Length: 248
Image (cartoon, rainbow, N blue to C red):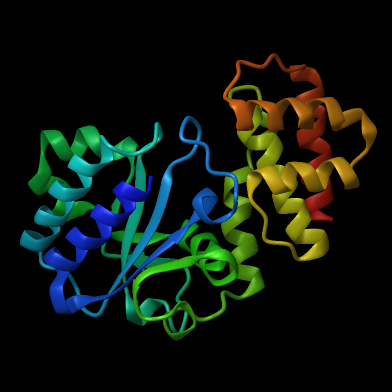
C-alpha cells in the first residue's frame, strides 16, 4: 500500500503542478482496519482551480494504471477545489472522481469520462469529516488549513444515505450494512466518528445481545475475508431496529 500511495503522490505533483494544494488519506488506511482483501484506498486531492480536461486525462491515465497495483477494491479518489473545502459546501462539488466501478467506462471512452465525471457528491461530507478527525496529509497544506469542520447535520445526512435502504438491502450485503448501521448509530448517540470495525465493536457494547452473533459474524468477515453465513431474518430485524434507533 505504501508504494501505491507514494507513486500516487509523486505523480499527482508532476501532473497537477502548481494547481495542487494537497493530497489527503482517509478511510480504513488511517483508521487502523485496512484489509487489502476488503478495503479500498481512499484519497482526496485538493486543487486551487478547475482542472482542464487534458490534465484530467493525464491524471486518470495515472490513476487507472496505478489501480492495478492497489488493494482488491482498488483506489477511490476525488479531486475537489479548495473553495468547497473552506467554507464547506454541501452537497460538495467535485472536479473528478474515480473508483473501480468506473474503470470500464474510463477504459472504453476516456474522453467521455473526463468530460462528464464531475458534479456533486454527498459522500464527500463523510470523507472530509474523517479527514478532519483521523486523516493524514500526504503532501501539501495541513488539514486544518484546508478543511473546515463539516456541520453535524451534513455529516449525518451523508452517512444516512448509505444506510437508508438497509432493510431492503441487508440480505445482499450483510457485512457492510451490519457494521455501517452500527457506526451511524454510534455517531447519532455518542458523536463518535468510527470505522466499520470500530462501529461493530461499539455495537457489541451497546446493542441488545440478540444481535451480537450477527455483529461478530460481520466483524469476522470484515477482518479475515471469510465466507460467513448470516441469519437473514435476524439481519432484517436488526436493520429495522437500527433504523428506528437512528431516526428516534
